[in-house]
Length: 621
Image 1 (cartoon, rainbow, N blue to C red):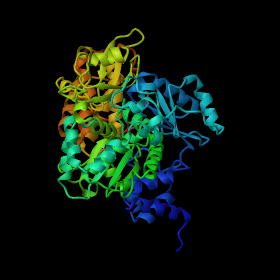
Image 2 (cartoon, rainbow, N blue to C red):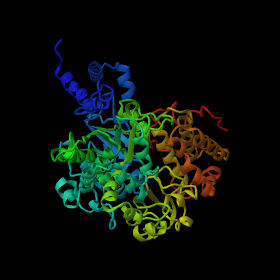
Image 3 (spheres, one colour):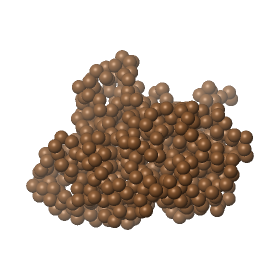
Image 4 (cartoon, one colour):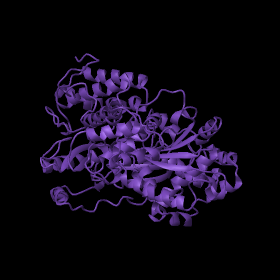
């Protein structure tokens, strides 16, 4: 039987990726184009070209937020409902868009033009609030102009969205000089700033052990949150036989984090060079950059940068006439916060649901396709060229003895000068917030800080003199993570904050392990009852008990960190919680006691109607 044209185009996607499994997400993305959903016929075609069953295709596709399997609107509208945007008017923005369109979340306008969705952090936190219409990103958009904006889309006219590269770095950089202008977005501009010299020197000298030695002397550790020394991971993978794979984790989904987006959109060749150096050290011939679906501009800029590098002979077979070959592929995620966890990302890259794996084995032994795999995030890899070009001792001297080097910090929330800052590790939190960040605006006072987006225990004004290095932050029970610092002034209600964090965690739990799946749902349902004015004193002990269970027994970091903000807010602001529970009153007037607007994040894996059913794995007093 002669194949249909659609099947032939799908065949080409399968051939491009090499295996039917790895082609599943690209195939689903392809079928989403044009009509914003995947039809039954599309599923059948993907099944035919991959050899996988339709139920397999649906089982994979329904895991990811960006894949829709029923007719929806021509235009997808995604409004960010995570903390940085909420602090800057995200609630009001959502209400205005919802009222303008006359629909709620996951509903479609009667004319079939718009469908409204919640969004993970869109990486625009320093210019919050933000939303997307299709792939157009809008930040700090005047709400009074929302009706006019959507009228333009109805007429088929597209307004000019935010410049995808964002503003330059907010302070004078040391390592990341390429973030100060858009010049290094292009190969020619990157070359003018000694780009690819470190890689070319490594190729010429042919001494990977020397390069590892420089990385060891630099003290460079994972900048995505793990802070594990990079040289140790390189040594571990080199002990295993080839083939070896290299993966860049560009699934930057932590609310308040936008540093990797800056690098990909303003200095993409620093990432590519860092991957080339790392691949040469570990003897990898194939590498992947896994980019989150919420970063379409990053994807396009990286595509162009990779083409430039290939045309210049810097990627591909026998690079610059040597025996070293390295092929770099872009893989687009589909909306799953959990895929920022390394084993979840690998499962997704293999074309599976993005469930985390148990450890051991570690991915340096058993990673992508069961082979040794090195994975680092964007910032870590983009540091490598400077480390080799200027020396490990130079880099180490930029920080302190506890944590060498510099770190990109993302400042958002109630801060006078939000933005991206490169600072030496060891600077005090006070210097970052009060000096570089300009302090708390509008005459208000600092109430608390979230040092790692939605993940870490919060910090208080009494912690301002802490040194910003990994051990010092750990000593007070918190952690830096990816350094997404969200600042909160005295207008923030801690119960309302915990409600939104719990909603996010519940929505993003992959559902694989019981502690996280049930724990995030139970904490969320308790918070719903409290902000509705139905709280009881026993609920505080329930939250503590569930949180302890989650932290001890969850498979991955999502489950172990999800309770941190509710638990630490109870620890530090118990009286505020008791006011809500005992007097059914929000002292700041933020929580609408007696009712709750249901637009936090509609849970994808809920076992019941939120707030209307009792908790199923604990006894509600």
